[in-house]
Amino acid sequence: MDSEDDMHDAKSLEDFYSSDADDYCGSDDLDVGEYEFMEDADNDSDVIAAHRHQKNYTILTELDIQQRQEEDISRVSTVLSIPRDDAVILLRHCNWNINKVHDAWFDGEEVQKIVGLLEGPAVQYPDVRELTCVICFESHPHDKIYSAACGHPFCSTCWAGYISTSINDGPGCLSLRCPAPSCCAAVGQSMIDLLAPADDKKKYFQYLLRSYIEDNRITKWCPAPGCEYAVEFAGGGEGYDVSCLCSFHFCWNCTEEAHRPVDCDTVKKWIIKNSAESENMNWILANSKPCPKCKRPIEKNHGCMHMTCTPPCKFEFCWLCLGAWSDHGARTGGFYACNRYEAAKQDGAYDEAERRREMAKNLLKRYTHYYERWASNQSSRQKALADLQKMQTVHLLKLSYTQCEPESQLKFIIEAWKQIIECRRVLKWTYAYGYYLPDHEHAKKRFFEYVQGEAESGLEKLHQCAEKELHQFLRDDGVAPNCSFNDFRSKLAGLTSVTKNYFDNLVKALENGLSEVDPRGVCSQAESSKDGEDITTRSKTWSGRSNGTAPAGLTSQSDDSSQWSCNLCTFVNASSSSACQVCQTPR
Image (tube, rainbow, N blue to C red):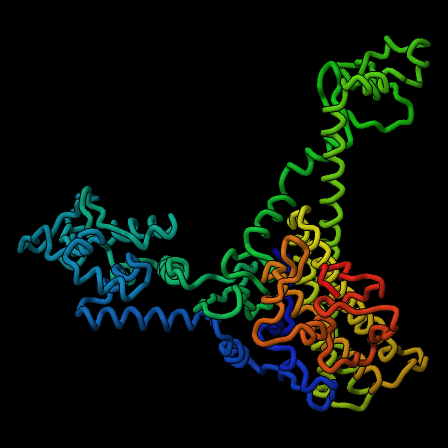
């Protein structure tokens, strides 16, 4: 999950995969005048309203939760003609599901017994002026004695102490029962409001509010540190990614950081692998050897092969053959040259140990390859988040002044940074996907690496343009920029559009399990032409183009007659090739 650095005050990112590529830009020819930008939200309510246009989830503030909770309580209380306290108890028992409450209520009296709703008092008060509290055994005036529906009498002081202790013990106070032994009568919220101190009332209210989210299967709290928003998930949309008002993106299904297009199981395995001790053991196995005497692992940190174990062992042995150093001499080729190892290796004495060590090294090297790229993209995303915040708070105003343009006409820069941040997140998780992609599926692996490489190349061009080429318009040293601001605008907008197309198609390919390539390395024609799309159209989509012309800042593929472009993956093959070298599609 992202650290609290993700929780900056920048506006939340748009969901870049909820709409078609054409919705991102006004047209394919990248006419800047047709761009549409999201206006700044003046207050929280405007931002909430914008988020509620999402199809499959709704962001809830604390006020929203209170209102919904109160509406549900009132509905149950009105329909069943029961007190508010009883409605709360029933709703909590049924996980705040009104339909379940109605079903349970009309199925019989079993649910009432389970939750502690009694038909009548189990104890009748005697008609006297004073009553004895059954906890402190002191006599109190009648108006100082209170009881739950069961009728067991307790003084206000004992009730307050019992309630306060229960509330301070945690959310279990929401299922509070009568303090009398063996009595199961429920204690409602009205008793808390009547007798609990102000601080305890506040805690009880928070527990009740949180239970509305935590006990309900369609609502969850945002997992970002310090965030107080909740999310109601309706389903039916694209995936499980949720964008909270705090700018944190997470997966509804597993509550980890948003990881589309990688599935939750892969993310879980990757996170466990990154934090597990198994990688430490792999490193130890690959880079150390056990002392032949005490078996403690030893790392070789000097050039010679003469090893001495640490005290109290102090055993001296040869690093190559693990034999006692005292056995080494002229007959073994000298003290610093051991030929016993090679001889023993030929005899097969060390084959298994060396095989395991070599396998551990290869596995560690492969894991390091994917992890370094995963972590590098995560670091780049964090830096891009900081750059976006600085752009919104400082640089945008400066550019507006120096270029004599209103800030509304500079939003293409903000959109570019948002695209960079989202693409870094996607690219990061594609390395986890690649790590678990089976090695024996060679065609899929080559196709995945090609599509990933094309997307990464486009992203690097966009990131460099937004980060370095923009800097020339922010300098104060009087050096003239290399190009006009309008040329820069066209280039950045074009790169943003092309990069979005690349990543849209990368996401779709991974979510479909790279179904365009079957296990034999032959293109699946049914998959590549679904929804009426012909293969030629999909080839243009992979390239990030829809009209065959590369936008500003990108170069088109060569039309050399000595080469031909694959209709599926757009890889440029030599004219002598009869099938695509990447996806094996026939020419």
